[in-house]
Length: 296
Image 1: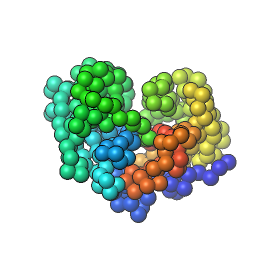
Image 2: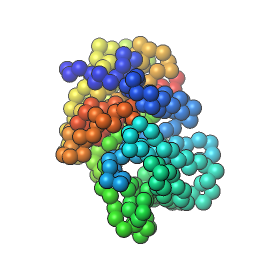
Image 3: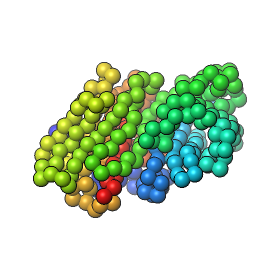
Image 4: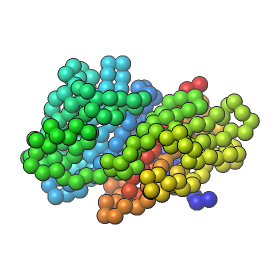
């Protein structure tokens, strides 16, 4: 078995480089928000702005009032994030626009969640768009309602989704949606594990109801990795369920689904680790990280 990624600490949930203040703060904030709202999804995209590669972080969340999101854009120094929050109070019309300033330039943010459809996650599944525009150039566009946004722009910049991080809550079953290719198929991903109801717990991962991974003797194999195939792509799966078996009741298990290296779109990972707490090794194309918290 390969060594578990070194960016996983002994407790299996610390993924940030301790030397990176902004990354450590973001990781701590993410976990704190997850415990408070029990619903948080963070997606990281790479795009170009003013000819330079930038990271854009979109965080979707949900509270008693409704759905909301934040947009963060890194500056040219790769050390600071400019942040815009769209809160539920603004969502009376569920459609609008605001501006965010980074490196003394203004980025316009447009969104429409009027007919957005949501599953168990605060991230919309369909019926929405979220776009970032700078001087007529679309630097990021997500969602399936693209025609209206494209009317506002002269050019659409190519962007790549690098990372998705989500917090899941449950007793024995943790379910979410997973998309491993840009504009690829959206799969039903389901993690099943009963650590209390059996003397010999096992871990099962299903993709669209089909078992793609199974780990027996989990007490001895609480950390590990294996390779599965999704949409013709090899996907490396890492798991760490130490906290479920031996840790406190508030600890989470961590699951990481990492696709193989892409061509020409992952070379900046080493430089970008100072701004984002990557749970992925350098050279990966896309990484889905799930924190599974037990509701006892």
